[in-house]
Length: 275
Image 1 (spheres, helix red, strand yellow):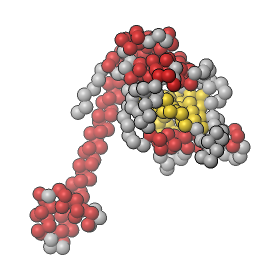
Image 2 (image 1 turned 30 degrees about the vertical axis):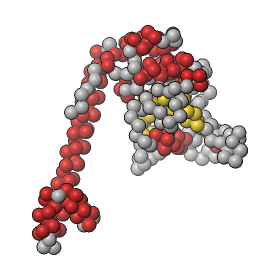
Image 3 (image 1 turned 60 degrees about the vertical axis):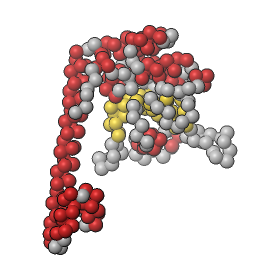
């Protein structure tokens, strides 16, 4: 069983603490203001763990933080601790599903589509250029200075960048703080906004109600994982039983004996019988 970190040990890159902290509009505003170097005025309280799907039959996604400002710009922010090697295409899926929900049926004026900014924050360099920030917008390959201006922007932030001259010092402090959300790191920050964010994060960590919620969430994840393992084992047993039956029916007793002690040969037979 996985070792559970205490609530006080969590950092903002940990999904639970990130979602809890971003329930507070002030934290979302601070984060967006620093990342985008702007003054963000949120139109509605942000939503965390917002479910999006195009229909009941299609794949759903859960957005970590979903917010809209007074100019109707949509922000979707994700904290991603592990490199799943699919983040660029995952961001494309997020973009497509968000876009598909923006226009009501029958509206044909695509200029009414909101601007959408998708931000993924990671503790690794996804692209290998040592940057803190990678910003992607559609451009023409033949005329590089020609932007498509389709209103879609995707930003990948790397907490371990190596070129501080390309971003603001406050963004670097924010990224360092998100990776290690401690008194020590906060104390080293010159940004008053980050220090205020840390004060609010400390209140979350000290909350008994949040501690109970965290424990319940962790237990639910472990239960789901255990159920998945049990289901996988049951499926494996059923596959082997079907294989054994087919081998017996065909009189292939030597193969039956060999498969019992040779996993590689067993897998070969499963593929042969398309089980």
